[in-house]
Length: 154
Image (cartoon, rainbow, N blue to C red; front, side):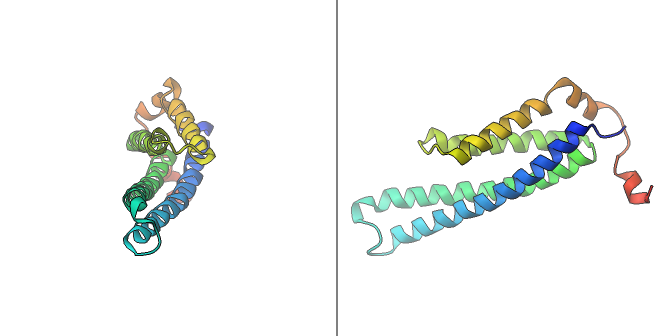
């Protein structure tokens, strides 16, 4: 079975999204680390704000680290989508749900910005497309690996 154009587009968009997510998550992690370091050092943060800055730094670090892990797993999901593997569909579904969750958590905590809103909307659109009956059906059928012909040079 040939890969539907929508799946190819989705795989490429998720690849770009994973790359951007990795970079942004790395920046989030770095900022979180620097906030925690500033809270631990004398003279950078007023004493009454140290606990809040440290907590914010810890949150930023962990959200960034988890976001980077999600981005790497997204790359594996892209491979699964590209080869029309059933595990690729499931992995893509899980990764998009986690990515959406990671964008919604800061918004629930009061940090609402354009980046979080746009990423959340993209994740939601990808999820809706992924669970449409036609797309799900393409991954349910028994088919050979579409990349096999490419490996054989056909």
